[in-house]
Length: 121
Image (cartoon, rainbow, N blue to C red; front, side):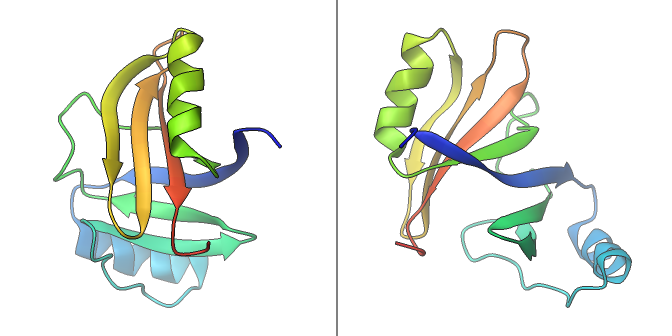
């Protein structure tokens, strides 16, 4: 199986997390999610493991804003693969109980996050 095997979530960077969460809950006709304990994000599940993540960027430097997230079953192997193929690592692997992730730039400068979920394993 491929190291990076599916599209995870789409990030929408917002300036007011509470207000934006209320608005997207109405637009998506979904219940309003609680803030994730790991950080300032609200996640709307969109089916089959995909979702929309509203992120207030409080934990990101101005230049570190991933456009989308790819899921992996092995974050260390994915990190090595990205480095071996010239991806510019922007944020080293971070690990917690729920997820491990890192950010990189592709050859065109697009920001991408690779994430391994621990809660579904």
